[in-house]
Image (spheres, rainbow, N blue to C red):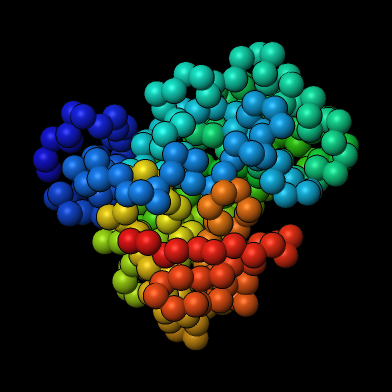
Length: 322
């Protein structure tokens, strides 16, 4: 295994390091820097999904009518080399919420009764202490119009030792519906320790969803993709979204073309249980939301150009650059 390029900030946990079997290993490629990250393409963006235009207060993204994203911390257990927030997390202390900013974020949720679901993200919210997580759950539990609390995290897979009894109890300490979207991209990430954590989370009444990114050289072949989805289901994780890679800076070497992605996901139909079928999603650059790739929301125009219709009925041109 090569020593990572010191020009790039990186973070990897011992659990993931132990799985690496060479430089081209799918685990290594997710977390260890690559010189190709220095190749910034003209179409790549610091905020590829357009969070900023939908941020009424710091930490809150209110893009869809009935739900908000609450970016509670900029810290992650690992630094994924393809992350769409790679320019915003880990090293930028300006993204950290102080006590006043956290109160303003909770106040926004409290004063907007249309908010039915709160999605906790970051960074990775499960890098917080059980005490802090318990405080967040308690605050959201007290807001009558919030019915669903959804957490998004890599921690159960990349740092399973962090998932203590206290952490799991804090996540489930509410009468509201609790979902945990576990971010995972390769079946080899699913160790015995991860399997144990998933059993404990399910026993605590937490519904597990799977969120993945389609990545060149990691999971973009039929066998790897099928293995990932089957492994998720065997852990009690329902595959939810499989994302087209966002146009984050320095990530073009990971990108899988839209038409090839569609062929791969269509190839799962009939060969894998319906439980194993994720929704293939494209996040429209500029902050216009997600659309399913395998739908009439995306129309091919030729030459890898598409017309995309968002959930508000607005149309956008999308170039499938690589």
